[in-house]
Image 1 (cartoon, helix red, strand yellow):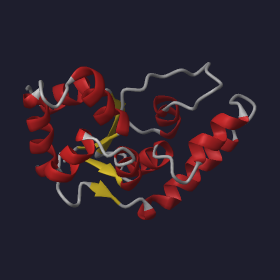
Image 2 (spheres, rainbow, N blue to C red; image 1 turned 135 degrees about the vertical axis):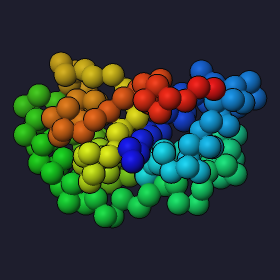
Image 3 (cartoon, rainbow, N blue to C red; image 1 turned 180 degrees about the vertical axis):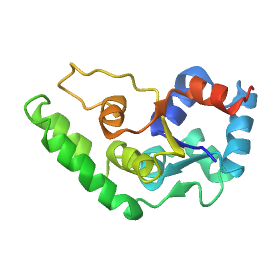
Length: 166
């Protein structure tokens, strides 16, 4: 079964700009359903990012997502090491700050991709980020995914692949 591994921006941008919790009830009900069916998951570092603010999004996640929704990243350290080697090979392209931020232990992006690498045939990364191969200031999830062979989609593509509407 395909499992979609969602980035923090999936939740944050939906909450702040696209699907407010008090307006787009169908969207949030659908997320809850998909999470409980095991069709979408995320990682502990995304949880940390989401829970930084004591806001309505944090409260919604705590109330509506299954206890095992946010997966531990320790099992994907081998894949993370491969990403680190890939990043090191890109030092001539990216600014040092971009590399440091991407590989920071508390940053979710590299660990999200590592989770996808752990099961290339069944895990798909979901992010609102857009590829920017010429960019130097920030390593984008899609650019790393492409080089590491990890499938990624945006949220609407995910819903289409799942055949879901809201």
